[in-house]
Amino acid sequence: MMSEEFAVIHFFREAKRSSPLLWWASVLMLLGMIVCFALQFADARLIAGVSVWEKPAKFFLSLVVQALTLAWAISLIPKSGRGVKTATWMFVAALVLEMSYMIFRASRAEASHFNTGTAFAAIMYAMMGLGALTLTATSAFIGWRVWQQRGSDLMRLAAGVGLMLGALLGTLAGGYLSSHTSHWIGGDMNDATGLGFFHWSTTGGDLRVAHFVGLHTAQTVPLAALLGSKWAVYGVALLCLILMAATFGMAVMGIPLLWAA
Image (cartoon, rainbow, N blue to C red):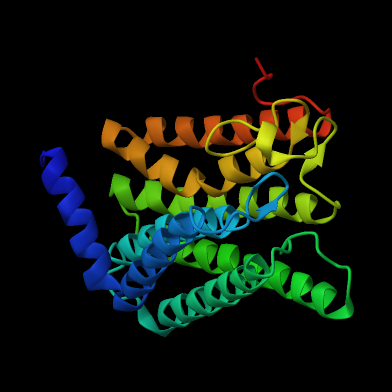
């Protein structure tokens, strides 16, 4: 069994080798995240009680994680083919659209999500929805291609299940979230009173929790393969499904993940 340090190096090496496009997109998004985090110290403007640059920074981070996960997953496909290459280009195009618009709105101290105040804003919000669907659909497709190659390989099984289930759960939670006018259900409609780094509501329901759990099933399930059992993989997948359902139920009932102290 490889050491943890070597396993991490192997992960990044395989991600870069299998998909240079996703690798360099991840590098650029990482730089974007650093810039956005730094801008919080130079720009005092706020949206919902937090820096205008906080949301773009966190989205950059989330997309870095997802893009690297996809690049690594592609390394598990012996012959990726044109379909996978097309999916990676679609994924990158969608993330460029999403982040470009979010940065545009942040620069104007305006919300990117739930902003339908003008015809342009309404069209772009719809485009963001299409972009988000593209991100999950391409992830699901790559997961399916990995799952097809699973054979007796536990990591391929876990990667395929994780990506497909994560795409499904993330889409369901995201679709419900986008059908509302905000991610809050009851409580303070302000991120300043939210939970730590994530700013999830501590006074009412917050649909972002279930969305987060659903999306990052793509990373959680493959980690279960390190336990060496397919039942561990299926068990963790089931736990992710239960946790997503539980946090979604709490949110729609106006219950926070953690109450404010």
